[in-house]
Length: 402
Ligand SMILES: *Cc1c(COP(=O)(O)O)cnc(C)c1O
Image 1 (cartoon, protein in one colour):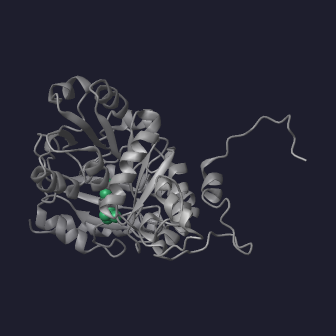
Image 2 (image 1 turned 180 degrees about the vertical axis):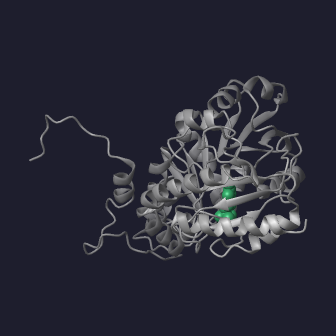
Image 3 (image 1 turned 120 degrees about the vertical axis):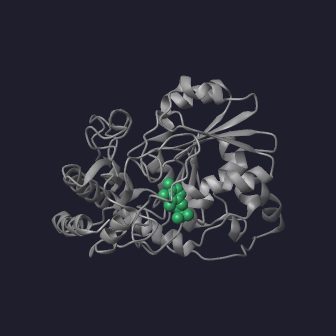
């Protein structure tokens, strides 16, 4: 018998990750939700066909493109992680960025984007949205609400945020910026891929949260997926309607793999957070390094806001080299690494190193660095081996003719 006198305990994150999305999914007693594939859904009678459309905002089988039980299991896990009410799974992280932008903006409106936003999101605003009559202004991601306020126009309906920023890891004062946006009648969107569950978007004023599940949720560098999570019925209706009209869809096989990834995410993240901080702290003490852009490192840019708003860190951060090292020297150094692969994306079990100077666009005057910048993703390897690899590579950097 359960002891009713014991105070109810709120389950911890790891416990919730083990159980989320599984209720009511069991088939033949197997632990995991099954994989359901399908386009056609057979209706038992004509009344069911007539009623189907009325259920489009619910988890209800209507037609394959609108999702099925495998999607719902993943949607419920992500909503749980983000602390929101409803979640839409889409085919990539980029689709998770563009779908809510299309849902919450229309011709004649104005959108505010952080200068450090994920590059393809900038491309979408500067080309696609521009062609559809939406204007975008970029703002310094580190600005205060008072500094952002003059950029609001009567037709500003959307404040986009991403914290920390792509490649350069600026931490935004989300609560202050969100309060201003709401006072001006604008929606607040956030790309919360870096924060995953370490940042709870809806507790900090965000209306719509975006995740590239491709990263730590999938965790194995073999699936592309995205999610958009909302926390109000009105936002859900708007997002869900746009996603349906755009035909946004993800393969249930990919959702099933993401569900498998999510069960081990807490242990992977705990390990990778620790290894990331260990490697970042080691790099911060190196004479070749001017600055480490890791919000969890005391003294690093954005550390104070990170400490106030985040409960942890993922294992993606930046390194700024001393100005005396040329781009060619940094490229030679990265190419000499044995354990770090060179490639886009992150959040998998394997470490990655990518020179980012030359791949960073800034138009609001933010993000000037004295030397070459590199991005590191720390995987599940032993941190001592990663540090030894970096130490060998730094010798290549120092020996490079210039
Ligand atoms: C990778 C990434 C995306 C896009 O995810 P894909 O699944 O690769 O399309 C979006 N936002 C951020 C911050 C990312 O790092």
